[in-house]
Amino acid sequence: MKRKFISIYFPHIDEKGEKHYKNVSVAFGRQDISLFDEIKDKSTTQLKKIISIFSYNQLINSAEEEKRTPSGLIKYRLEEYLHNERKIKKKKTLKIKNEKLDSWIKALGKYSEDEDVYNIMNELKNLKGKN
Image (cartoon, rainbow, N blue to C red):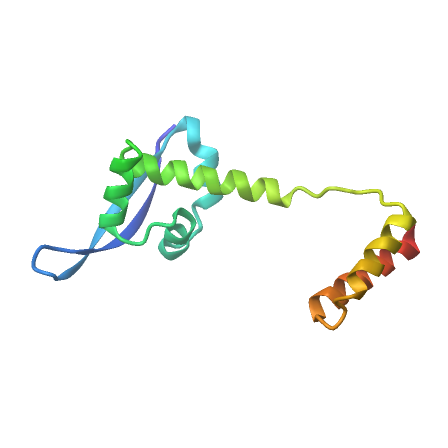
């Protein structure tokens, strides 16, 4: 299998204060091809947002602090982000007794002028009707 690559362009200010762009290529081999498949369609801007690194200097400094190569840091942060994203997407079902819903609705009633709280109260009332 051939390796796959992504490129991320980072702004870089040189010693003269001039702005340039540095291209960082990240290689994906057999062991991390699934990571590549999940991020291959993302733009440079999206990738920088995911890894929370927005300049070349920040990338180099962060990589040194974490004792990783720049591309290793990028892959680590991408994997960390996707792992967390997968956990969030998992749905959980809760069984709630009507008495509990009544107490929650009553407690929230004190704050019903807040639109978000009002919406939550209505959702709870809808749940009560389904139990």
